[in-house]
Length: 434
Ligand SMILES: *Cc1c(COP(=O)(O)O)cnc(C)c1O
Image (cartoon, rainbow, N blue to C red):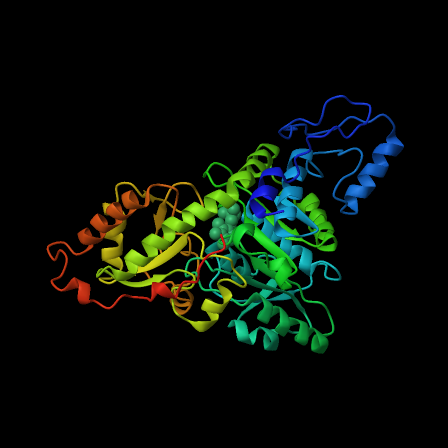
């Protein structure tokens, strides 16, 4: 069935599971807030405990809420179904999910042995900080996508990339990176998991597992929740990796709260509709911003005219999504004036919500990244990131246009503005299937 249908019905049992029962399961999943679960016999409880210690998805007795929660498990099953993965494991935040991924990949024979991560910039500022700081005992090599294979060493525990990337919307060819890693594995003698942060694409636009990646990571705080009222993270993956992640989650305690699990499961039901509508708005704004004289560059998947991106859009990624970023021609001070002149669009970090949000990554989300590394990975001080919501697109454009003219006070719209070369060829966008 199609994604719209699966999103509405995934992991929602309406039929009676017990043949003796007249009525079905609840129409919406129950919110189970228990922190602990009673048991009748110690030996049955011990069997359940053992199953959970081994990383099983469930056991007859959930035992304790840090080990398993049925409401969270329903969200996990639904997300796994949308991602085409065996399983998904949910965490308190996206960063908790990424932390668990780094730990699980390092774990097998590691103890606290130093491990090596190969990663492609840019990634979310928090992820960059986590990997660069070495907090989890890993050393990181930042490389270009085509150099991933050569960077893999005997002690490499994972390859991490984000596509489309936060905040430049740069796209990485997942299949090509996987092929480089698989070839390098022969040389280094062990399996190296490829982890893709697919937060910007959502399962509606991209399924990294089907492209050969081992894990697809989401900050569920963004599009999956979609309303700016719940934090969460999730990893869709094979059952073998899911077991390892559940074991890390049990030890480190970063499990999703059941109320958050409920909201995220509900959020999935409208995800395809929200993604489609927000994307339609974003296309209009990307196109108009690219023609605006105060804008020097627009980043939006497929708009650069780069042949690789054009090919990936429609094969790897079914649509550009609804996050874009742009540079203000007059520089960082003008960008700040644009942001402060907005009346409708919310000045705030985060993204993927039903309302439109704007921020300057160099000042906020990517502030923790060294200025030099930021510049080198395409995040200058005058870059603004816009997460486009569900408002009427003409209201959004009026707000942006007025704020942009405030960026160059006294100058107004330059004469002959229409002769200014558009920053990007937006007509290069491929038609959408979503
Ligand atoms: C926000 C974000 C994260 C971190 O997620 P939190 O839920 O804030 O911990 C990770 N990756 C990307 C791409 C993000 O946008």
